[in-house]
Image (cartoon, rainbow, N blue to C red):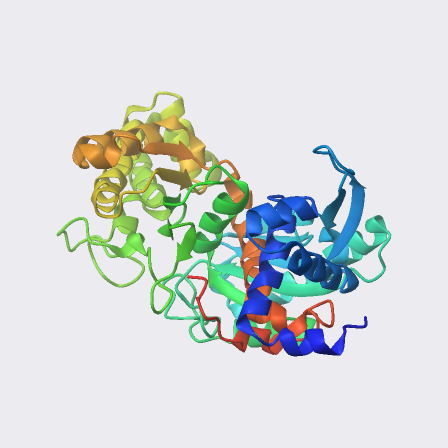
Length: 438
């Protein structure tokens, strides 16, 4: 698409790029739908707004819609973001499952698939399957959407372990043998010829809730995943906080006990995850079944040969005293640690997600009781503690929004807007941001 030469020169200046990104963001987020609204919300002059809208329309990012409401004069024409101009590939890899999807540029899921998978099998077989699912879902979207292209603008991946965000490589992940230092980004970049971002799955879950879930419109939140492991994602000032190396929020390996006979998967003792995670509940439930302390779990063991965290949750909901005690103890341990974080960080909202958290109200009630009892009164005066609105979809949606946020950052937008798409530009991830999206 043609872009006027002097516009290309101007586009190199930070002020021009910022105004272009501001106009695009206001339209694509729905904050402004007409040129007059853009002027009021952005503070930009009418001529500048018109120029930026024209460029974004010429590049295929915006389009004219129906007439908007009139304020006394001629009715303005509404503007729409072309969310269907491309697609995002997103995947959330958990300890025992993978969720894969294709979204449009507004984060709407167009097709998805979830299936059991063992992250401990290693990167090659797991990512082989992820790539296969991406191909199948892309074919499905292209067939049903009538768009033979459905160009891939970017790929977002959430992993169940620490990730060095700058390189997209896992860093000594406790439950991911063979993944340490594996070039996940490089592999997917070569496969799909698009920019790729990789993060810890709990960060993508937090981002999913922030952009499309129960935290929408909030500025300071704490997302806690209670599944096979335990982790937290922090949002401060409306932005995801990853920390300097990308491992902020790894609360599962914070010490909560001095006992040395309970060894965590990370190799240390006393970790929260070793006492209150899904694997810990399964371990303690199995011991209760073998020792005859739970008739319900003993029946499960006799029938299936094992006991899972889900079995403990079902037993507790059936009134099994031992299982109730296990879940209550786990909730109190998690709540005690969260109470410290709530007093330290002072979020407005704590979101509890993950497979174990979704199993029932007992654990959530124990978490709430500990947090409200042990945190500072001022920190809990307006604090809400709620279950995840997106449930097991949070990580998938968040992985897509991770890519969308990065692609539309002003500095990166300047690199591809004249082409109308970042597709085929994997090096976009290396473009430095003046204000990093932490």
